Length: 107
Image 1 (tube, rainbow, N blue to C red):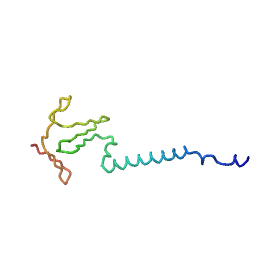
Image 2 (cartoon, rainbow, N blue to C red):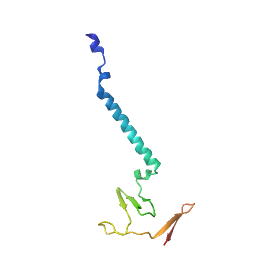
Image 3 (spheres, rainbow, N blue to C red):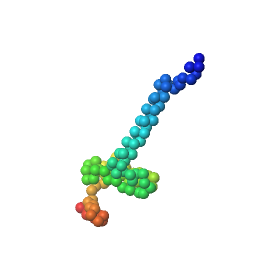
């Protein structure tokens, strides 16, 4: 009778092992997200500063992403945007010199 009381029944609980696997999966998922943010140099997403990102510059699928305060806007320049009435086209090229100065050359 005393042996049954002293035995630990937690070792036989299969659900306890699943909760440990869930914890490991969550830690892995968070670590993967942090690694991807640092790999693609997207740390400015978490800052309080305003920023602009241009994805695929000069190509058909180019996107301009801007953050102003708490709002994030996504703009796709094209000849006919659906419903918004906005149109966009390439108007020039910007070059950054070695000293950090940016020069805009209109076309």
